[in-house]
Amino acid sequence: MRSNHREQDATARKELGNVAEQLAELAGMSTGELRDRYLKVYGEPTQSRNREYLRKKVAWQIQALAEGGLSELALARIEELAPLAPLRWRPNLKEIQLPPAPGNARYLKPRDPRLPPPGTTIRKDYRGETYEVRVLADGFEFRGEHFQSLSRVARAIAGTPWSGFAFFNLVNDHEAR
Image (cartoon, rainbow, N blue to C red; front, top):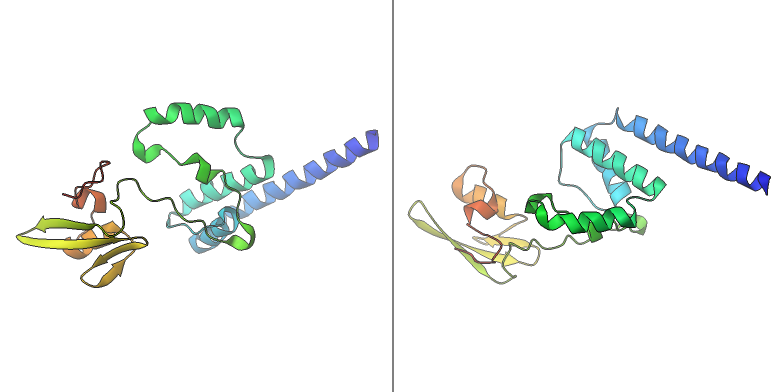
């Protein structure tokens, strides 16, 4: 029995060593390499190109996979406190805690609750002209062109970077103004 316990300790140390090696390896990675590693550990791609953010996110996920992630008690406490946090800080914990799918299959992103349902037309009066954008299940259609985000549509209209939700005055009540 004592021998079995030692074998488990040796295995645990080996795995921790592997985690430590993986974490040390992240420091020298380029943004592209970190994006690839993100895809590998989360099972979905990232939109971020911020090297330091990616390094931290990948490091956290490597450790979470090795050590089991947040406890049920911690998750319950986060859920309890989440209604008090600003909307942009609230993660969907059920999505975060999903393990990566085999073969790096991509998860479907949950739909932003501020978006009207697919098929809805959003109208915006801007500088004397009315613009119409059709909401699709996988993005937006503006003047026959497909856009991945509402912010890209806003940029196409205004010519400068905008938050799509701010530009189109979309709030949590699903109304397009």
